[in-house]
Image (cartoon, rainbow, N blue to C red; front, top):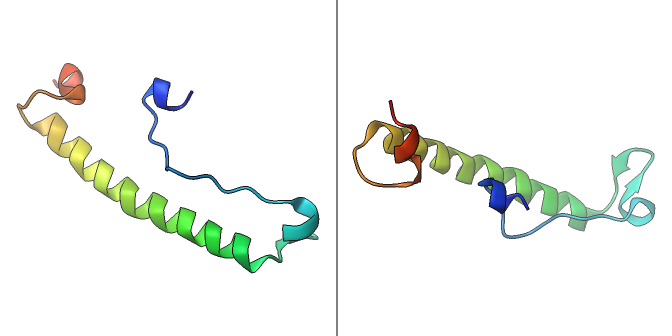
Amino acid sequence: MARQCYAWTLPYGVSFSEDADVKDGRIVSETLRRRLEMLVRDTRVYGALLSRQRRADLAGAEAGFLARIRK
């Protein structure tokens, strides 16, 4: 659904079991902790790349998805 609304999505998800991975509001699973660190890193890295490309697309003259909203 998100993709159909032109949202950017990662090719994976992060799920957890409250009984096994979280205790008293704290992450206790090292696997979950690593997966969340990967999610944060990928969101930061790919978000920055997409942001730079968006600015370039809006400033440019090439055909592309964002060409329709150029001023």
